[in-house]
Image (cartoon, rainbow, N blue to C red; front, top):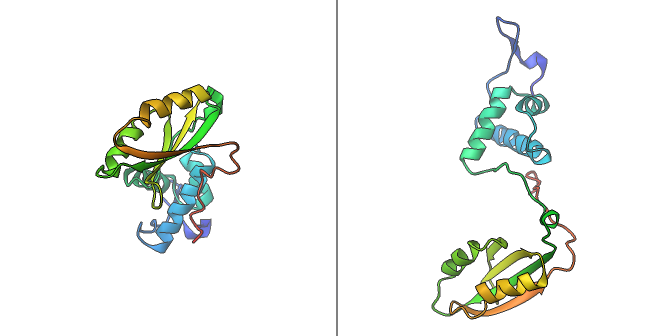
Length: 177
């Protein structure tokens, strides 16, 4: 973190920060992690507040965030809580793709379904894991009937109803490892 003694005064009396660390150095990566950590706390945090907390200029923070967005390292978005919109029924469905069918083609078809919020390819008994939200059991049954049952690209499915979410981690500790 830069201190006042590590900065220089410009001719106008404003603080001029030392050169920012390069993106690909450990110091640059640490700065990115600090910025990301603060944005995870509050995605609307002003760049000036972030800059003050990490000890760099506001312009450095603005440039770093722009680069992280451009490089698809982060995205800044509002997160809607499904329960607030009446989606009280959560399910996880595992799908075994039919022989001769490419897993990616089934994944592409299912990812276009609005109720699907998480879709993963897995190793093991099933090929895909599909997490969905629904307003009711009838809506879940309709999802299964429309998108899973009777499709030639689906060999087998296993449904799991989510009774209680004990942990849903949306922020990551980038320093762990």
